[in-house]
Amino acid sequence: MKNLIIENVKIVTPLGSESSKGDKMRDIYVEPEGCIIITGGTISYAGPMKGKPAVRPDEHYDTIDAKGNVALPGFVDSHTHLIFGGFRPDEFEWRLKGDSYMSIMERGGGIQSTVNATRDTSKEELKKKAQWFIDRMSEMGVTTVEAKSGYGLDSETEIKMLDAISELAGEPDQKVELIATFLGAHAVPKEYSGRTAEYVDLIINEMLPKVKGKAKCCDVFCEKNVFEVEDSRRLLEAAAAMGYSLKLHADEIITLGGAELSAELGALSADHLLHVSDEGVRRMAEAGVVATLLPLTAFALKEPFAPARKFIDAGAAVALATDLNPGSCFSGSIPLTIALACIYMGMSIEETITALTLNGAAALGMADKIGSLEAGKRGDVVILGCDNYHIIPYYVGMNCVQTTIYDGKIVARNK
Ligand code: NIG
Ligand code: FE
Image (cartoon, rainbow, N blue to C red; front, side):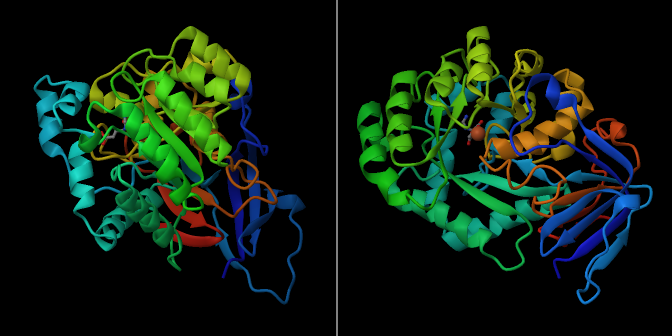
């Protein structure tokens, strides 16, 4: 049944059907005595208990009495590398001893190591592994997950990854919506070592046409000694011409100009941005590109956090996501993401909520469908086991989600 009434709940949500920018990120609608009605999976009412409309008596609705609880929109994790073979705990230990992420990558470990493992893993095995993470994410209130390819770096394996995502998305009892992104330009594979331009040609001429229809967005790891700004521009322009929406891993390790490129090309988002230039911040704000910040990665790599305040003060839309992946950030923790954003990035809890809901949706081009508790949006709701949303970051890394509702169905319930 996709008909549900949540009564006596404190509604806390951003509003709108596009990204929330700058100061507006703080504007959160709060209804202390609220009611949410979900009809056929879609929110038909979200407002005061007093004004709630009658529902059709011939249709069955389940009712939840959520007195003493907060309701937020379902969280949108708009940047993950959910599908991968193997694990890389050895690299984690090397980094603890002082190795850098890029030095491990340059000597053939890092992404290439997961590429080797993913090529050797069956689609069924990849799906099983990913479903375990989806189940955990759902317990933390996530209802939409972006999932990237990028551990194949050949047509066959990239397609295997994207097919795994689409088959998981189609599971009848799936707990989240999955949005696929093609990341064939995640690294230059060992077969093309020293021949980056030829590999970009292969992506443009062979992979992009083959995966069309299997992925909504095209992403690139725009980084020194990986795909430089010129390689990235050539690839993304070709992808845009084929109808893909654009995303970039930008200015993660050094200041390279990925942010500026995202603005020039009108990307949906540029992500990471730990080392973004002031000019990059300004241009992204001007172009309306969502700045997707990934504090768990900065934390795990012991890098400085991205300048969230600079983006917000410049009038940009900031989203937060986990970057779950087997290398730089082996975590999909929403509670820790929120705590880091509030403690280290100077974001208020209101801005953090907007970043994980409406702006995460905007980073996927979906702000008209999800990301807020408003009539017409999908019935994705998180019910917290507390009545005060201000205390979410106080629960550092601990999960205060009680119930997750996706598409009008209860998909997770924590005791
Ligand atoms: O977003 N920087 C590139 N990609 C991922 C890491 C992937 C990996 O290490 O396997 C990231 O940090
Ligand atoms: Fe990433």
